[in-house]
Image (cartoon, rainbow, N blue to C red):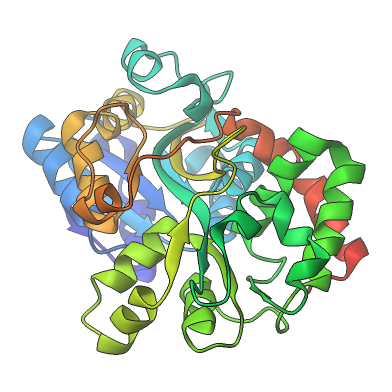
Length: 339
């Protein structure tokens, strides 16, 4: 695999002719910033002989880049994290539909755009981490419980600008309607232990430090902390208890890492092969062990740390709905004053 910096990749991809790329390459624009993804690209090249050229950047930057490049864009596949960002790319006309028996058979319906414009290949549970000395699990059995006045001053969670929280609220809109979701968001905002700050790991650290009693964070951050080379991170993770919400009803909210075929992809067939490879047993295992993510394919081998956390019921609404509800979620956050 040829893995380039954003600047070097931009020059290389822009200067390469379609003819030169057509036979043996696929050009991937990726908003995933994990060194472990190199193993995915290398495995694809080893299996197919197709070289993977990667340009990394933030999701919105990549969307704007593809739009500016227009019909001359060398992009074949765009990869990003969370349904909200996939939906934004779709709305900007970035993705072309793919009708693949492999993807339709291997990926559950909830992980596929209804028109095949993008597909989910990895999953993260948005779950709770709590102080077992101050919180009983029955107090926080559901997302809805976070709005209980009894938890006033006890919750750590990221900013409303965070796409993970936007998708969580989007799921509440789907399950409770906009009015019910706004009541919930207001209740959570009232229960914050501090102004939102930092990333998911900082929320877990807040519980370990006694700044709050319950944190909301993605499963893979917790798993990464447990396996960190930083002793302080391991200690913080070991000081909290994980909990999968809503196990008695709809299941735990899922964030998705996904990808789609770029409209006008110069290496169309290679791009489809790459997407299909991401749903293979080999790639699903690499997602799992490389970044502590849950595989999207049922029965695929899982990361040992996640296995140790136990099985859980997942909310199986189609992740496309989370994107569709994103604009309303953002408006609700603004109205309730969730910073």
